[in-house]
Length: 184
Image (cartoon, rainbow, N blue to C red):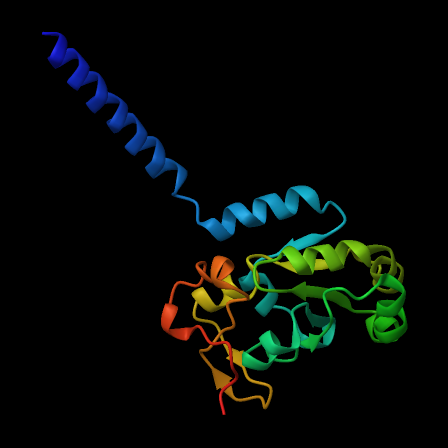
């Protein structure tokens, strides 16, 4: 009898763990990462891809906050590459004039680097545009996972995406699209 209770108890715990685990993983990793980003970056607004694509391109300046080798593999059409480590003063000097009357939208691979930069330059962006800086929810990885358009440095359409590294690259659903080098 004790063996049945122990076995039944183990099976019950396993079932509870499986159900709890299933509930935990109903939200994607990118959604959980974004929730953490949004919670720590109060000066930054966040925009879903569908809302972003509905904007008129004359209404915003789009900043890709990744390294040059990542940008060379693929990026969003019309994006301007900006160093993730740029200071607020350097950002002001380089991009301040181009922001007047426009929204500043930032993205990176998943949203960490872009939210950090958007937070650093929030005061400048709000002074220039009247709006808080905006971060693309889920970054380029979510964009790619949804099958949206990416382009190469020469403007050619591509399905390739730079994974940043192996840890973060696990968030890219189609592993065949991962590339560390631009198309030639």
